Amino acid sequence: MTQEFLQDAVVEDLQDLFKDYRLKNSLGVERAINIFPYDTPIREGDDEAVDQEAPPEPYIVVRTPGGNIQDETAPHVVEVILIACVCDRDKNRQGYRDAMHIINEIMHHYITKRLVGGRYMVQYPFKWVVPDDDTHPYYYAAVSMNIEATAVTMEEPET
Image 1 (tube, rainbow, N blue to C red):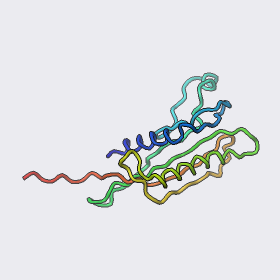
Image 2: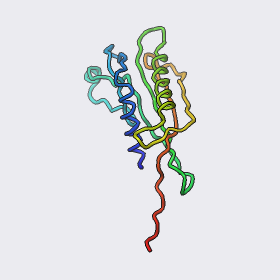
Image 3: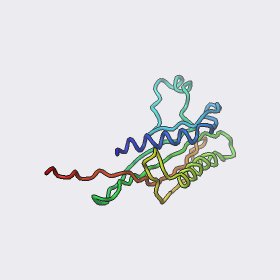
Image 4: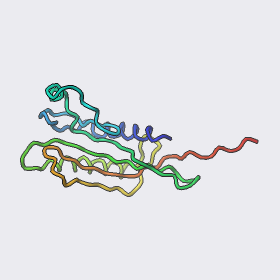
């Protein structure tokens, strides 16, 4: 097991979960939610060219910031953090509701499904957060969870 395989499995799983879910991006165009491993891609070019590029939102970033193996018989437990971002230019500042809806869909999915990629088991606890920073028109929410994978074990000595 490598963390990259687990991260790829979560990305693929979320792409399937949100394949029919659409929100408007910062240009006002309705589109599917992008799912990115680690972070959003870097946008290149001058300011005018960047404005014409398709912005990444709405999106979910899948991060694997750490993990642990407690002992030689314990599974590898990887922390997975999912960060949702949406853009809502409405002055009523209710965009956080779309971000929270995405996080609630993710939690419901993994609480009821529990298996990712046919081999990784989702564990409790789930922790979610909505930052209180003023980032209007962008709104964020995140959830963290632990996913259990098979740990690397010591090879048997040759006889």
